[in-house]
Amino acid sequence: MTIWLIPAFFATALLYASVGFGGGSTYNALLSLAGFDYRLLPIISLCCNVVVVSGGTIRFARAGVVPWKGALVLSAIAAPLAFLGGYTPIREATFLILLGLSLIAAGLALFLPRADDAASGPAPAARWVWLASAPLGYLAGLVGIGGGIFLAPLLHFTRWAQGKAIAATTSLFILINSLAGLYGQASKHGAGVFGEALGGALPLLVAVVLGGQLGSQLAIRLLPERMIRWLTAALTIWAGGQLLWKQLLA
Image (cartoon, rainbow, N blue to C red; front, top):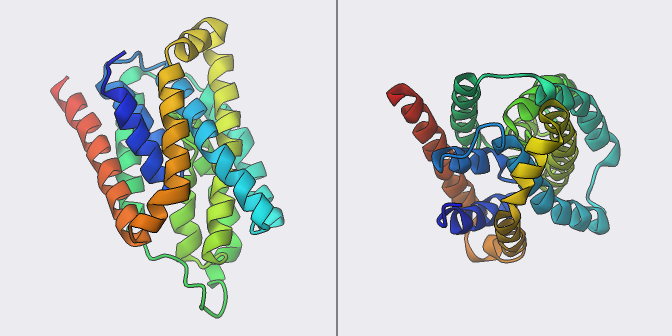
């Protein structure tokens, strides 16, 4: 394993956890740039996602800020499509191009306005947000991400709920989609590839556990939330650009 991946995964988990995401999109890009077999990327990334967002989901639940009805509806619509996406065969070049484009789109989405807790209520479009769950779930499973990095800006833009409720919803959405997508990937590739992916991923899983805990507990207190989002967006866009550039040169 390339040694720089461990601190890179740590830093990615720290940044993403501080804004309520898992980091699966960037884990995928880092693994690809390190030369990993593309079939292993979604499995490792989704496992890291589950590790990072599980703690956040538990904390949100204990704090009583999860809007369970809305969050479960969005997740329940997306999860079967996440499994289907994970199960869908895809060529390496197509996978990497989709991943690169997804990363750039996700990074740009982080610049969308956030929900204003003082706003009078949801925008009219908020009632139709559930329509986006199915395509987001499929994309999440197909390229091995949780999908929350797309869902959260949409929820904020439509003022679907207050900020903490959106963060809690996103965390649950990522967790359920990651598990569904992971099951789809395992079903598609079989136990051999799944075991190979996890066999070399232990140092990376440890890195994201530590980075995720530090990100959720400390990073948001040390830097303004907007600055952390912009740093996360910059990292995401850079990773996506690197992937697409690599494909252009191939």
